[in-house]
Length: 323
Figure 1 (cartoon, one colour):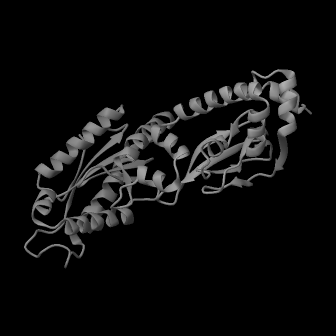
Figure 2 (cartoon, rainbow, N blue to C red):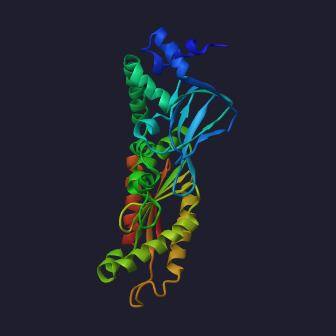
């Protein structure tokens, strides 16, 4: 079995250290053996330990506002994680668990700072590599995922969700759409994109109180949450504008769901929601599909938008598909 010294010499984090410095680091490291699915720490836990994977595999994930888990990183032998909480003195911003039987080396906060205090030359080399690797890691991810790693839970949720409805916001959509489109291209599976407007929204905004307008938006969003599936990404793009990403979905299936939503919103009980002299609440929807209607993301968005415009120009309260 490979020794700690031999292992550390091949780890990028310790690549600048001499043999003597490697031996000094080893004195501060603790060896831990874990079975698969062992939770090392959870979001919100106090962070006071940095981990290095010696064998096995570790993953980190965050819980999204809809309750789903999103994996944000995977760590293999030679990788390290957990440093952000130590540097910033913050709570753990993600949950980490072992994906298989793993051996981890850990460096506790007090030991790290003892090295910084008593072995500054060693510490400079270590911190230089650590910051380089951390920066590269964050740059490899989308902006919102980088923020999710660094920010606290409430700030993280505010960054990607619409404050009124609790669904995703435009910032999340822009990142997620690129990600899901790339997955569809690589997997050869379809992706449908739906753009939705609340009909006559300007009339509501100009004649109703803000609280009443907010209730309309919330009522419509509640129908979206009921009819769209768990893996569909619902986002509020603007005041009355919504966009939905439907992974692995043919255009026919997307149309069926969108049409059901149109009918449900038209038929919903709005007594007490808006004055009786206003028309019923309805929505217009435009759908485009990869690869049926578009070969690239910009074309997909443009065609969905044009389909939405056509739905509105043809009388609203309907679904129109691209082409």
